[in-house]
Length: 342
Figure 1 (cartoon, rainbow, N blue to C red):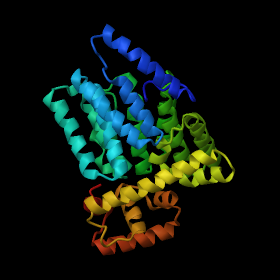
Figure 2: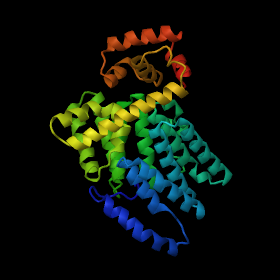
Figure 3: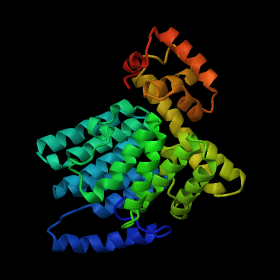
Figure 4: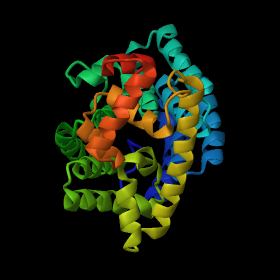
């Protein structure tokens, strides 16, 4: 979808074109890209929150990609399966799929796809608000030596933008998101535009630029909701849910926002379950709110940025930080990050 979703309101037409055109293309190019139409169908089902359908079609796409040794298509399927397993709260499967992706690249010696695997695994960590799991070359922000092609750059900007958001680097995020939006508008890659506008909305909101924030969020909703594309907003719900509620209160996008907030609430509970069960070092001693503060602090956010993110006062953040340090017997945010594996 990142490559081929072009027109707001045109997703179903694009899916039908893929179903009709790809079989002809395979005959002309000896099966290159085999399974692509199934991947796009599965992704469309996922982004519109039809998770059971997405998983069913993903397995079909997986079969076809393996049949013709289409490893790039297979990685796209495996990334979607990672997203689905996270949605279910199955961290063991998520991590296992990530390891399988690494083994595939190494075993088949298709090193050109190593950075693609890094993107997928990094984004899974970012969905759990664990920026420390981001690949070093992505976190460094120097993409001059990336193995990704130009067509894959929107995916890189989606991952890096979320990394900057998790780190509270709002000024840099605004610059990157604007550039990413312009790049994604060339083809256009509409999904890249949607994510860029969501990131801009979140960054502007954190910087108290509310008019710009709401304008960017409206732009994203205008582009996404005609096709019922919801998951980019769900992914970033923690940053934009207050703005979404304000827009719904003005009777804008009411049904779409209600579904987004419902899905975000479900995923927040799932995320907390994963963190509690698989990253439990602090879960037994910290309250839920302290855990939120602790993860953001360990990720490098200032007290002011944490306050803006969680709608707390700076004094409230300071008080919770003192409690966190005392309960965990740490004296620095680095030590806190070591405990939380960030």
